[in-house]
Length: 384
Image 1 (cartoon, rainbow, N blue to C red):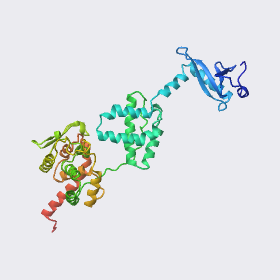
Image 2 (image 1 turned 90 degrees about the horizontal axis):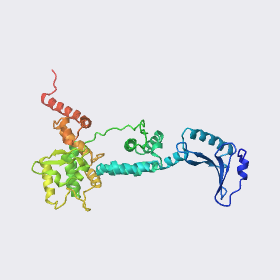
Image 3 (image 1 turned 180 degrees about the vertical axis):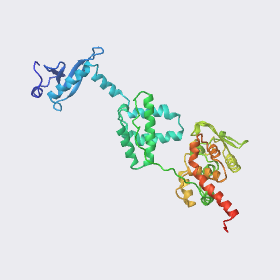
Image 4 (image 1 turned 90 degrees about the vertical axis):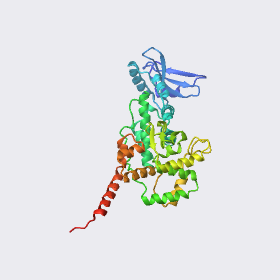
């Protein structure tokens, strides 16, 4: 066409009997309108890639969504970009093949998460499936913005503020790996404000401990009762006790050698065992048979939780707002009350960083007050 294509020209273009027909503009080289057999019309731009002269065809947009004038202006803009080395078709192909958040989650699980403890794997996979993928799976990794992450965090925060922080930490780790894998250049989680968290300071009082021990004797599920007893006697984490194997215990030295693969710190941790703990283990050993685990399950693995038994136990002992993990805090509390130092408590709990054990320093406030009261009882408080 010798003249510029107008909207009127486009409206009057007939559909070809088969295939497509392109009518080119008389002003901008390579710019034209394509008409399909079905009568659909779209503006296109033919160009040659500057790097190698390869011919490309870029679809600007359909008519009448795009007018002839607007499409021509876009063609001119594209030609200026192409003269500077741009390749719209190539960039589109690159964008389409770019990894999505679903791809990032898959690679994260395969190459990073597979090396973590089973409990960590289960927790992260649950967060990925329930929180991250539903909101972000179709987004390109390189295109995710601060606003996208902030929206995810705020949405989860409405129902579970602490959980929202856990998800944010997970997403941040995933993007750190994405940078390492050259999937993007920055971490969009940076600057997202986390919800304030208040560390729990819950542990058993002496009266609660006595009621708990009494209720343990009446717990119908004897295996659950023994799991809880071992938690109380060792201060170990729930997952460590549930997955404990007989080959980790040295009955001669009265020690539990937790392998690094099962500990949070990824290092072996030797736990000295008290006489009551050894007595419990000996009783369990009598009925262990060929089981590899202290607390085997029917499927051949190990017991996964004691949630129902724990709820029943707390109800029977009339104890409220106590988590299973608080038994670990209680273990530290008993040690502190008995005069153990923070470094010693940290060693028994398997902490590698003093700052981790420092979270239990509040226990010493009560221990010191109790010590002061004992002095007061001896000396008396009469003033002359």
